Image (cartoon, one colour):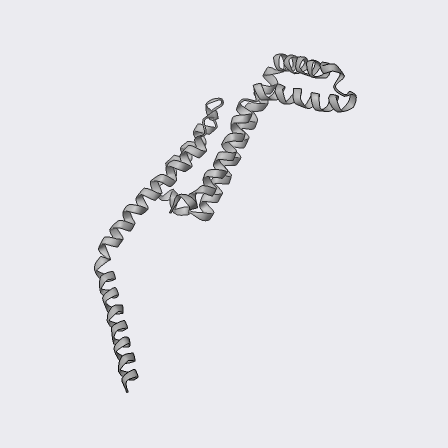
Length: 182
């Protein structure tokens, strides 16, 4: 396991965590997106009109944000939970398909990321990305130790195999030289 192999899972989890963060902050982003949409549509219908469309749209977005805050908050919370769960399933499916042995040592981290990401407003912390990073770093560390142990245990066998190949190469070279002399 290397970080290059771990990168796709980290990218997927980062995308879903960013989407979840956007929905957690939907109480702020919702009215702003409504204002941008208003400016785009009204500006394309009647033109700029000396900046009045921007002012009107900003005032409308501020009013919508003030009076629509409970609706934006409810929508954002529900969508953040849904996106978090979908991201958890997507990353879990990716890890099961490409690296199922990661769950051997790290299953609790992955389950904990689901529990942490589904709590409203606390879910703004990128729990899935952090847990996937922690799982991969733990697996990389464990596999490096296991590889070093294997390499140490098999050093004698590797040396013997290398000596055998060298002897075969020398015999082939001697046979080649003796056939060239004849």
